Image (cartoon, rainbow, N blue to C red; front, side, top):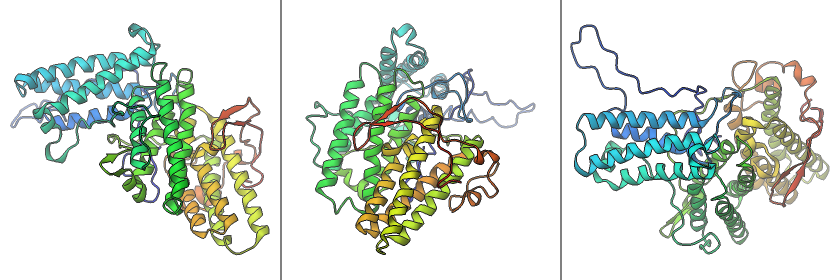
Length: 496
């Protein structure tokens, strides 16, 4: 989900609007007064091409990682971005049709506007087919390719027509914002990666190709791109330890961990309907982390090369996840423990109390394990939204815990302070994207679960297990694939 760490992001509150309804409404007609005195204004966006471009931007953002659809709504998150995407494009289509009917376009620009309408029809059909087995397109891969091609063709038409481009950017607007570019004539293996900007250009190739979803046709190249970015960042971090220190180092480490998480979504794209939602959150979050860190943002744009290119903003914030009792208890403890563990680490680092540091390191490992197990047990949209914050070594959680432990062992107070800041920011972020079943909101600064909730925990706190016994789940990590076996584990060490 969108983060709000360290003044990182202003971008959205994230993707999916999750309308949660199967029908696709048309643009509303303006109300007609009984006794008109002055003309009623047109529907919002009907005669403002830049406003239509903002709606199209919203659709672009939803395409990252692929559209998704669920029969059953979870946590107030709607039934899928396919609803949002089709709704957005229908609004854009209606607006352009009104502009054409009003003789707002002529010559080549009129021809281009009509071509956009045809592309919208293709994209709408392909969007539905991409989540329903491919339908008349023959396969999901073909539907997703048609979806991406038609969507990008609209952007190319607008940005290649001087009149449409001027209208889309009128008064500083950024309607019909271009997407990140693909690599030019080279593969990830051959592309240069001596700078973060060059590495970011490889990432852009992946984030462009993943528009519409991962499938049998593009899976290998996206996977190769992600692997090249991981390897390039690790090499850069090893070669420039002074640059990748403190907070910037923790941010870069987080990016590497979340890139490794992306392999999970790539692998499960054909079998897990929620993988697109997870990938969307993950890809956009990685870009946020880079662009929100001043040092990383500058490094991602140098020597005429740019990487980790942002996608356009969403129109609305993602609905907050409506937590059940167990999730409410979990988040209250997660926020409290993130804050209290960080506070203990800052107080202990450099004091030479080996016993206290050893105990704290054990508590950090227990915290990481319990959080990971709970996240695995939830799955679904909960996991898709929060895996990149919670899923062990392939998440912010893994980066912050490992950084804090490394700082405690070496006496690096700057690193410990940075890790504590990220722990607080991470917990504040997820807390701000959830609503407790008890009402109100989570207090991001609480040091106990009761302080976070502003009231006693629900009774489930005495009974809830983190995860039932279950099959092994393989997760890629910085240390290689790991077997994570959900086990019954009561909140008895840190969360009692």
